[in-house]
Image (cartoon, rainbow over the protein chains, first blue to last red):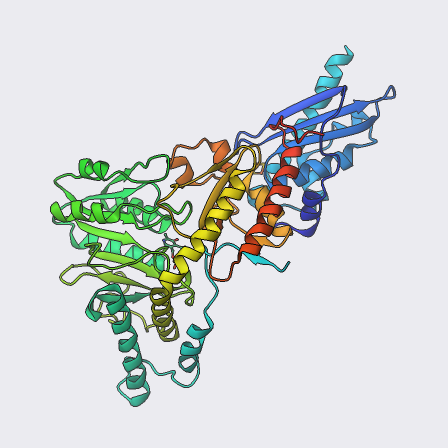
Amino acid sequence: MYNEKVMEHFNNPRNAGDMENPDGVGEIGNVRCGDITKVFIKVNEQGIIEDIKFRTFGCGAAIASSSMLTEMVKGKHVDEAVKITDIEVADNLGGLPPQKLHCSNLAADALKAALKDYQDKQK
Amino acid sequence: MDRIYMDHAATTPLDERVLEDMMPFLKENFGNPSSAHFFGREVRKALEKAREKMASLLGATPEEIYFTSGGTEADNLAIIGSARALRNRGNHIITTSVEHHAVLDTCLALKEEGFEVTVLPVDQYGMVDPNDVREAIQENTILLSVMYANNEVGTIQPVEEIGKIARENNILFHIDAVQSVGNLPVNVEKLSVDLLALSAHKFYGPKGVGLLFIKEGTGINHLTHGGGQERGKRAGTENIPGIIGMAKAMELAYSELEEFVPRMEALRDRLIHGCLEMEEVKLNGHPSQRLPGNVNVSFEYIEGEALLLSLDFKGVAASSGSACSSGSMNPSHVLLAAGMSEQTARGAIRLSLGRHNSMEEVDYVLQVIKESVDKLRSMSSIYQGKGER
Ligand SMILES: Cc1ncc(COP(=O)(O)O)c(C=O)c1O
Ligand code: FES
């Protein structure tokens, strides 16, 4: 059902786990399936995302998408990271089965929520 | 360790002895049983012998056995065929919320033809209460369809008792016994059943062949139009190699039942206990009235699909409930009917044991499950336990 890249990320997820004193936290639940992803970010003074972690309760696609997203985000400026879409996450994974496309929303939305949390804290 | 197959409720491997019996009918004995010449006559003879053998195993007469393309078609023929035949007597059908989709969706499809369908609830173990059956019966009830054993959680229904109720009320009784042959004694007389569906690939026979028992004197309309095979009930040239294979597979299933069941139960119970020793796990289905090879457990905080992928990666084949629904994101209708929350239902996996599984495999699988569950929980957003890094 899933391609090799998805399976590789699923089996060896990057940046899974918790973070102490994150600068931003975002948590999003998927209304369609009840799955939940949480993203933690650490941002330096230049606005670069130095570290990112995720935790996901979800299917294989949700876990692989979370992992892929963290890879895409690490080292990017917050202004760039905010532009990342679920479609880009799915594309970077080499595509997801049609009924699983919604799963990549979770990670992308959780990142947006984490970035917003970070920006709110800056004010 | 080699790849381990624990998905026998989805399908079983073909028995060597079954294949051996089938081979001549895949090669030299290719005649059409409806042909008058000796190529056909020869095959006709074998077909009728297979029919007699299966009838006698089931406690039926050969005239009561109708071959189909599998369990799904047998269920469709039983339900649609009898409902249409009895349309002038009534239009109410009773079934249960835990049926296979081959039954549930067939009953619901009849609504479009003006039938009324009552879908009975089940208890927390997925079991139907015969009292609910009694109460659901109306003056216009014509058909009652209840499965013998559930394909997802393995719960064995009180079909004998339900059969009595059907008889008392003069209602046709259909049993989907697809998961039963090889696991339970199946005798149509003891079950006082009018219609009973079977599928060969669930008991080490070939895929794409099954049968419907139709009790003598039961009127049912045919669904396929054509050459009038199977005494007009199921048109289409019979799947001869399949039917020959099914007969052998059924013979083996019956003769090996006594040896098979305790062996499966021992594996099953070890697997269940091993799972329940892990944290926050729940056994789904009935604690004792369950199929000898069925294990269905829910692990909290993780999703069954993710767990299956992880097991698959380590060479263990399991399922999330039913082969047909993998890939869909809906939790099992059986678990929801048993009152489980969506979140817990999503954490369910089914391991169904079979002839070739060993204790050694069970122990290995337990270890693999534990590793996978721990790993997935350690990255789950809703898990706060000690798996945290
Ligand atoms: C209880 C039950 N009924 C019906 C079926 C359908 O049988 P088949 O695959 O032969 O169409 C299955 C298996 O998939 C089953 O488990
Ligand atoms: S099914 Fe819910 S995130 Fe994939």
